Image (cartoon, rainbow, N blue to C red; front, side, top):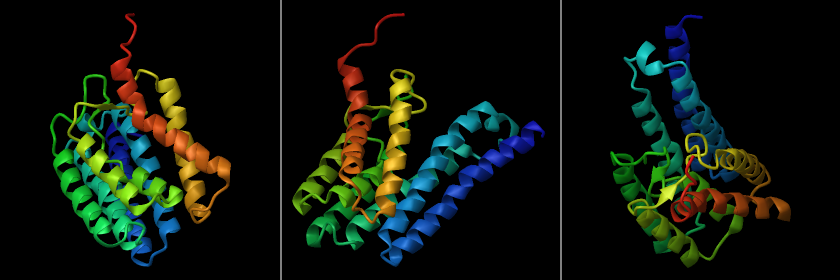
Length: 231
């Protein structure tokens, strides 16, 4: 297989995320929230593997006509922001004005964040909360906090997008990657399980989902507090 063909296949893999986004949106419009999140988990997996493949096969060199980074951002906005925001609003899990507030805040703040040229730090972590509203929305669906607490979570994380806080990229942040990557894989499995069970899984799944979510949310901040050892 030629380098150009391999690079084009990686672009096609990335673009498949748009199809999964549409399938998730169709499920959301029909209020099939479990199915919606299952499609978002599939898109999350694609987003996790296409980047390493793009770097391995040098897609920017062999298939430069398609901007893989831009394509990835477009799809990420759909699957990480737009559809989860719709789900929080339309499902009624954040009812009344709390749903409206979350909808406006998530979509508006995330649009600005996705255009921020300082999104990535030198160690390939994210600068600011990386607008992973798919993960936040799934946790809210599963854990069912009070509406005001759910809205408070949205407000705090929206502000955190623009604060000098670090959030690990499970694949690209080298520090603690041996832990971060398995935790991200565990979160993916638990998220799919939770969605498939109609957001009423066994207790161990709920605890596992909460624990992995907290690790991914806080690991980068802890890394800022605890300096890396030299060498």
